[in-house]
Image (cartoon, rainbow, N blue to C red):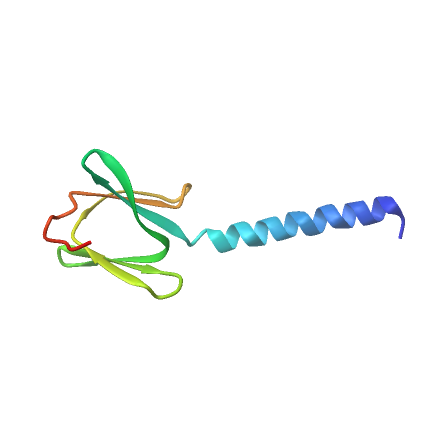
Length: 93
């Protein structure tokens, strides 16, 4: 193989890997809540958000779960962010 062929192959593999890596990240989000006017990170690598009555159940890629009393303000699929508001004081988190 010539050097130019190797460079082209390298570029193709790098591009394909970038797409695969990007797709694997698409399902992971970070959950934030506004507390005292400041954004606080509640959980990383969130793969599932379920509404359970007046609470939300967040589940991570590794199965860790956290239940919070809050309202969903916004889910941004482009930035992989979940923004919660009205975090209830009775929630021990």
